[in-house]
Image (cartoon, rainbow, N blue to C red; front, side):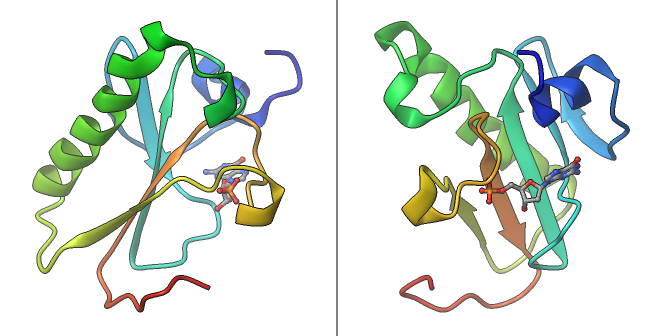
Length: 113
Ligand code: DGP
């Protein structure tokens, strides 16, 4: 979608440090990492928010989680990791293209801030 930063990363218009990709998904390091490992896992298809998901997107969302597992294995993550969707303004969503944060390499507290 025109003007979407993450679509520009998918198209190669903006450089990123890509750690995983397949025909449906791309994953790259967050520009502003909140943990020693901070990866953004996104669908190639532009979907702005969870509310915009259609029934037929449900397997794609599962694919995002499965990609997270594959990345964690590839990066030899030890001690667990946190997976986060910030959805909407109250949750701190800044980029309107669904993305799953994979955070690892430190201990996380709960509840999240
Ligand atoms: P969120 O707040 O959940 O919408 O997270 C958006 C994340 O995207 C935020 O942690 C910073 C990251 N980000 C924004 N622009 C870029 C970019 O151009 N490149 C990369 N690698 N990350 C970006």
